[in-house]
Length: 303
Image (cartoon, rainbow, N blue to C red; front, side, top):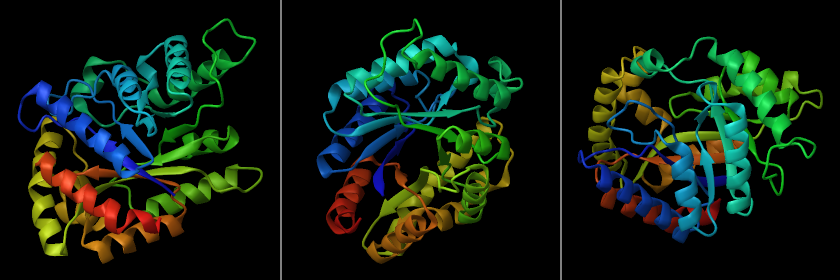
């Protein structure tokens, strides 16, 4: 199992420069601690989550790191030209010496984003866009540069049509941090059914994360961030009840002491998760660093 970070570029202090700097500090610490990957979201028209220019962030992270893999979670392909995406990901693949993971999505339930950008028929457009992107990466196409190796690709979706497409094209899946193990089990079953070799998928799963000396301490530190996240979801017009249930977040997160975190990670590994992305959820970047350092010392060697 690869273990890494999931970052949203939260603007906790209402200071853009601080938000970018704090997330960069977590990335560099993650690399120093031996984490395998960092995954970055793409959100638009969102003052709290500043990852709108995801390809710019990818290039910056690649230029400032040496070993850690860098992934998009995810590029919203319906709003981009397939040629531009193909050129960008091939360039990132070469610049990073094959440290780039390509995650895509159709776009989430964000009211303002969906109002101001064209997401009509977004699922079909996402899959059609992937067909075009892959065609442009072939040696015979006139798009350059060419990637130096196959680019690991993941689709963020629990929809059967998308899962079938992934299975038939040797593409991995991505599971959001609020998708339960039951949802992921169904995704795996659908993937294997659509894969003629009945092979399980590569699955990146993100989970809210905070590790402390006790479960009580970890939960008390996580709750204020979860409440603030809920407030931001309200501003984005999201209606799904799971976004407003802190207990559901804690149940599906990796939040607690050493024993609790190990238990939850083992459950995900046994389920078939191949790439685990930890989303640090304290409001305090220094506490997130301490939590990651504790994790790297006490848990990471076991996986």
